[in-house]
Length: 201
Image 1 (spheres, rainbow, N blue to C red):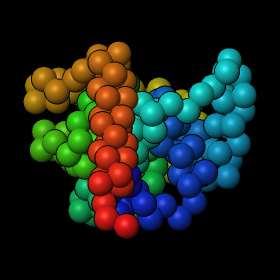
Image 2: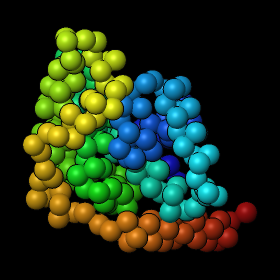
Image 3: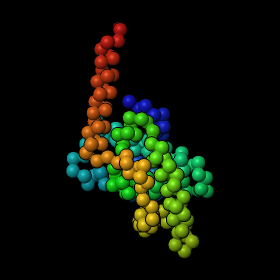
Image 4: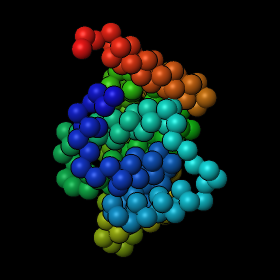
């Protein structure tokens, strides 16, 4: 089921899960608090939800978010921006989620185990201006502390940057993404079961 090595090799699944979900929920300033504090914020928010459940669609979407996160890390690294990669990654994904209204095609990430060329180009285009905002800490303050503040997120959201046409063309509705994800994983489970039944003893 874990077809991508960057996903199956999570070093700390609980804190990683929190990061993936929190950036997708457009809370990069909370992710910037650090792994443990981010996880605490995530669990507090989870506790506020009525009857949270883990469905097949949720599982596929979580893996897709992991693919998005880890690929964004690699792309940002190629830019050699000079530090604060973790913060840049969190803010870039959060802004992509914000601009797309959380309609990036997670099902496609799962199917292809990669991002589209258009989305990767958008990440490379967006990372430098995000990095520049992070460096503009008020009063020449500490960048990592600035990244933890809602005001920093407000500043990034105010960037004059919109989704490129290539990415806009790939957007999907939340409903169809969930349905597609559920169908994909159900089909894979059925294939695995069928293979087990027909394999020789």
